[in-house]
Image (cartoon, rainbow, N blue to C red; front, side):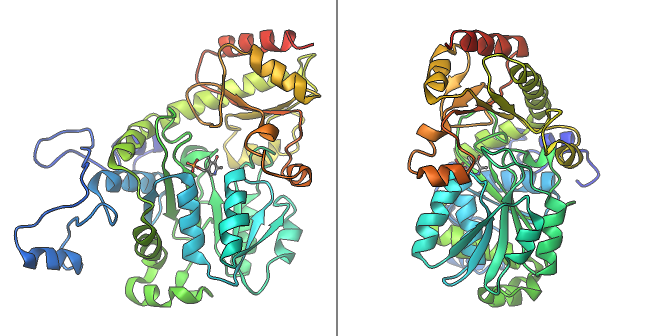
Length: 415
Ligand SMILES: *Cc1c(COP(=O)(O)O)cnc(C)c1O
């Protein structure tokens, strides 16, 4: 499979055809359990002596097809698909850390991740040290004895700052801890995490991987860049003994996903697998539309500031150009001066939808300060780059003329 180019992998990897019927679309095995004729057979499958499925909280063939495809896209050691992006993040955190451990995390990350870190993790004694991920010296100096991983996003949301992933991987490698990267907004298509030395990559598949806003899902991929056998994560010892190189994946699946039960429904896995077939085509269009819209908005008289890593004056443009092969993703942020103007502008839009999602075929907008970040203090909002006059845009796949016309008209009507 490794000889195929990305576009081909997106369509063909993970599943060939059904062995009985020849169906080329992945069958939806919508079942909780799998029956065997004899007690001996089920015993063998349970003990791992014979391949087979037992119960969908442990594994399911529809989900396995999706896991194999995402793993092929990332050229990893294996993937674990979960019920959502958040459960994928929780799976990684619970696999790597125990009470008393610390995570060094970018302060410019998805709000849901911050809430998970600041509530559940805190409650169970896992401490998060937030840093400016673009300050690599600070990252290096902030790794302590109990730091068990570095956690970053490729492009921070909504600050749109870009992580220098190669530098972060080097720092993590020097400290012998894994670099965990949430690459949701860049997807495996825009960013080859393995090549950059990332240990574990996470995607919320709800977004671009599915691409149509139809269902939630998440995935964790071990890229094989980190040697778990030398890790200082104490709980790994039994897994290393049993599974060697596969220790992380076995620990994540058997220790966390199976015990907490954050499994995806087979039907959702089916929808997400369908979505991934067109990921490369869609990402090209998202990026092209976003660049054109950002260039339009930057010059618009009603816009105070437009932020997009692909814009000429953007401080992250050169780094983004190198890392994402001259493409800059589908997210733009906009400042309009006041909250009232933002609300007025959103009310004026006819095409773009006002909702809390991203990576949809449809163009989406949201006012983060009053919605996603509603529970944060003003001080915290400032840290996360969420000003009261900020609008986040997820640029969709519509004809760019219609998108620009919608924004232009809605802006002109703002006084
Ligand atoms: C949406 C998102 C998540 C969470 O994913 P869900 O599927 O909504 O649980 C995590 N990280 C990033 C960057 C996201 O955009």
